[in-house]
Structure formats: C-alpha cells, structure tokens
Length: 369
Length: 217
Image 1 (cartoon, rainbow over the protein chains, first blue to last red):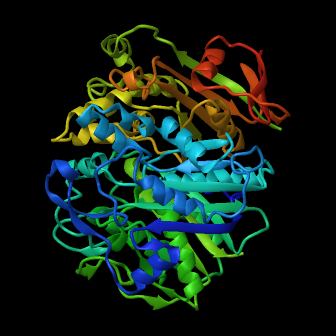
Image 2 (image 1 turned 90 degrees about the vertical axis):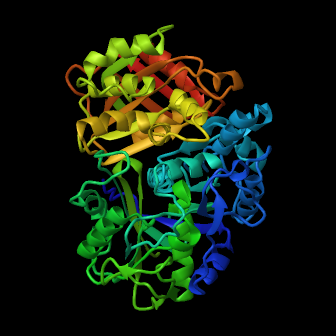
Image 3 (image 1 turned 120 degrees about the vertical axis):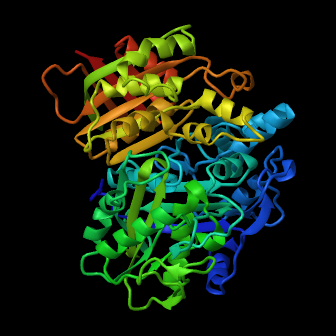
C-alpha cells in the first residue's frame, strides 16, 4: 500500500557492515571486494561451509553478553542528537534476529546466561538501557522488510506532528539459528550468491549488519517519498509467479518518481525466481533504470538490509558513483542489471526495495531534499 | 489527539486449555487439513482475524511479544538437523501469515510489532496513525514451555482482533483515543487484552506522556 503522506527527511543515516561504516562499505563495494567467507553453518558445532559475512573478530557462536553489542554501541555513537526514547523523540528498533543466537546457545549449552538477550522484548529492553534511551522504544519485526516498516512508522509520527524527530535503528547479527534455518531451506548452501544472474541454481549469502536513520520534518539532506508496502500472502517462501507483488509495491515509488531519472537498488539475494521477477518489475516500472544489488558482497543482512543499503545508497549519491551488482559470475537477468559501477550524476533519485518471507515487499524513493 | 471507533471485536481467552484441546476446538473454523501445521497462536489469531474478514485494503497491525514460542522451541530442539518448516513458522509474523496464505488473501499493509511494558501504546499508536480506512489490530500470545522457564515466553495463551475505523459506523462497539498528557504510565499486551475481553472502560496514562481513553457503547 502506497502511503502518500510518508514523505519525510533523513537528517542522518549510517550503517556498519563487515567492511566498516557506510563510507568504508561503499568504498569496498566500488573496489569489488566481497565480505562473504566460507563458514561452518553451525559455528563450533560444524556442518557445511556456507557464505557468511561476519564483523571482523566476531564468531558465529554466541557469547554472553553478545559480541555484537560492541558493534551496535559503535554505530550508536554516530547517531546525532539525544533524548531518544522520550515522548517527542521515539525510537523504532527493527530487525529479524534480535538476540535469537542466545536461544540457540541456551538450548545447546543449558547456560542460562544466554537467556538475557534472547527474546524481542528482553533484548530491546537491555539495549535501551545500554544506550541510555528513554522508554518510548517500539519493536518492529517483519523478517527482511523490518527496517522499511520502522521507517514508515517513524515517518507517520513526524507527519502527524506527534514527534519532531524519530530514530530507526536496525541490527541483525548472524548465529547458527538463522544460518541453520536458511541452510535447511537449501537456499544457503556452499555456492556464493550471484544476484540477478542466470545460473543453474540459486544461492544466498548472509551478513552481519546494522543501520540507523534519524527522520525529521523539514531538516535533512534527503527525502524518503512514496513509501509502499505489499504482502502477497501466496506462500511462505515463494512469490506469485506473475510478479504482481513486486509491481504492486512499487506503485508509490513510481508515482513519486514522476519526472525524475532513477536508478534501482533492489533486494537481489541470489535466488533465481525472485531475482527474475524483481528485475522484470523494476524494468516495467522504471524503464532504462540501472538495477543494482549488493548482497553478493555483503550477504543478506536480513531485517536490517533496508537501512544498511539505504546508508550505502546515500553514500553512492554523495560519491557520484554507484557500485555495480556484486556477486559470482553469470549472465545478467535483464539488460538493465548493472554489473559494473556507473557514474550517477545524471540521476536524481534512487528506488530502494526489499522483500521478505510471505511475499512481503517494501519500497521507497530516495532523493535530495 | 488520535482516535478510532471500535467496529467489531473478537477475543479468545482459553484459560488452561492445552494446545491439543485448542486445536480440537478451532480446527472446524479452518478448511479440512489446513490446521496440521498451524501453531496454537496461528490458530487463535487466525480464527479471531478471520471473523473480521480481512481484505486487500485493510491495514493489519499484529502485536505479539513472544510470537510463536512453541514453534521456536521445537525449531531449536530440531538442531543439528533444523526443520525448514519450523524455521518458517517460528518467524514473526507467522501467525497472521498462516491464515492469510491459507486464504490466498493479499494485504497492503501488515505491521508486526513486539513489545513490553508500553506494548499497548505502541500497537495503538501504529493503528491510529495508519491511513487505512479500516485497521485490524490483532495479536496475542501462546504459553511457552522451556522458554517460559527462562522468562522468554508468555505464561498465558490468548488472542484478539479488533476492527478500528475512522468514522463511527452503525453498531459500533466503542471508541479508543490517544492524547498527550503529563505523567508516567504503562500498559502491556495482556492487560490491554483484559480490557478488551471485559469491554472495560479505561481512562489513564498508558505510556510516559500519553493517555488512553477507551469507551464502550
């Protein structure tokens, strides 16, 4: 559903990936680097090696307190402003994992110290205390479109005059829980991902990632417009074959992009059917717009991908050059897929799209304020 | 001030009913064979939501603090050979998707939330700010087993679904309103459910700086 009221400014945005902050990640993507490495899918419990991108020094195995907390603290130090979590400055914490790695460690070891960060409410409450926020912290979790939903809900508060600023923070750090789950679905396997490329079988990689955005009204260099959501409700892990879910979700961004020249930052995990449908929908809605996806290098940062990739898209516009579609080789799924980096000075907006289980879709248009 | 009218309400408070008893009670509400892989929360939320006949243009706000606790427990128990089915069904917001996928019923906006002591406020705020004509605010919890021992699951099973509309309709049940106010407060999901189930009027702070008024006609 397109939400015409959800045009709002981004006052600040940042991310952290295995390459570092948004600037370092952008530079690494331009250099064609890949953060994915073969890692045993169950960490110290072994299993097949699969492509994972972990923050340097971090193990897939959970610790108590979690190692990833240091990365979130570092990211939070770059969030401008204060008084977050007060009635006028609400926070939206989004993601799909939260501290679920602790549940895996709890079950495997019986050590109750892993329980402290294990569930959405307990994890968020501890994070809130760690970061010194007030109590107004909403929790949003809708698998891999979670960050988009946080941006939409925060936007609505600002447009309603309920808040003058809102913070959206998203984080997803890998664990045997999530790696084992995707491996069981067979889409996380020994092959490295090749988003938007034709090959015999699809494969994804997973990555650690976190991001934030401070949204405000009338302040900030960037605008989010045409925020849209759509839920196919066709199958838990497959899309409707006609691609209608992808197209429906782009309606708001398409309307907001009238008169603009755009490039398209897609979801592009490396699965084949979804990749083809996404490319077809993007080419239909935005003819000639170059399509890029970066999960072939960063891995899929799951519920946080919308914010992580927003921060990289902003760096790309600032830098004047867009990193091409990362990943293993193969023929592109469409002529609009940009396999190489390109100068983006002639473009004046970016469509940012993500997808999730259940045929959930989310998209918005990023442009200069 | 944010306000919507309560057009319809379904609550399910099964008390000490076991998951097997719940499945037996609710299976007739779903197509034959459809309930085999449904979770307890999926059955209960799905049944409540289906009575409101969710449509393409509705917004669905789904509130559950711990979500599919039993599927999560079983998924964790399935290692080192994790179950793909349990992985899917343990992911938020599986309860709503279990119903809607079964019905092949797309919906524009699905906003799945979790929460703690301010959960009722956050779910209501999201509902009252939605531009959709009709917002279906649904949710609930299912009682966990070993996760409950660690404080990581609900100690109670319940579900609800409420239809919230901007304009008062004939037969409206009540009205809910949020307003800024001075002071502290909180209202968790179970306490909010009890207000709905009892159709209990409420006027008071449910979050720092926020007051809720709920009236029943």
